[in-house]
Length: 389
Image 1 (cartoon, helix red, strand yellow):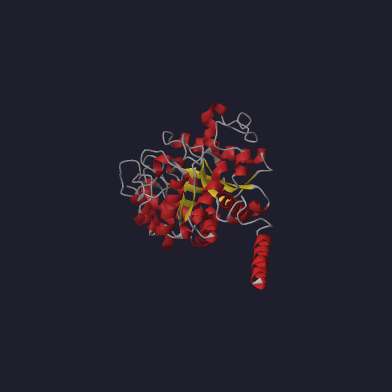
Image 2 (cartoon, rainbow, N blue to C red):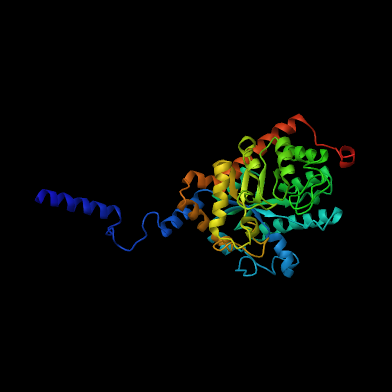
């Protein structure tokens, strides 16, 4: 009997030692509890770069009467008018950000080209003003290097094909200026592609629209299908030799909104290699628009289930919307979403992919395709007038 008691006492002592000397009933965070999940989430953010596919801070700088003046809304300091500032980016564990250089579709022609260049200039001036926080990235290797250095890799994404004014030469010059994706449409159709929130005119891409996709492949610019119609999505998937992205979109099966991705398209992503970066826009997440962090995780669950864990990411749309889901109110909140994925049973490898490894893989593949295509063909000099007669 004394031997049994001794064994019990020894086992108890060993258990307490493994738990840092605390009794199992002590009031400390239990494994799998909220505090433990958040700690695991924060550790993952330190391990791999969280890369957000879409933040509209450059446009918010215009909207809040700052006239693109970085000093008027200095994000070194807390900025309650914005969803984004440096202290909260650091708190959120952000490793990479595609800054949207959005201009509204009400701007057309030369006005759209000029405004987009001005937005790109905002990003360049931002990384110059805050060199201890940001560094411009144009390749996957850049992102990884900048993340290892403790800075936030800053990439440029164009939102809306109207910005190129139907010119492949203009597209190439935007790429030369650092743009690494272009959303083919915004809220309305362009002459060569249908939007998901406008009356279809083409049924997808025109011949010139297909040439835009081919030239983006040749450049290494990611084809972003957020905002496009299902027909445009399917045409782009048929034409593109590189993986496509949805920089900020949700699952249509969960909310039948024109901005969301149908399962038919999700099922094609494994063959293409692309990624859907789930967005936080309440109206895209749920009917009625009163969304929560759990709704975002639910859309990520759906993309992971239908397309697979290699094809899901995060694309918040911070500073591009007025309201946000409860629990994801600003850029400091990403670890809470990561913790929710862990709580739902996502393996850590799948979480790493969603945080940033998937979009890095897409970028690397697009770079490989571009290197091959640039050996095979010269820049396209096709015009919309010649192709879309």
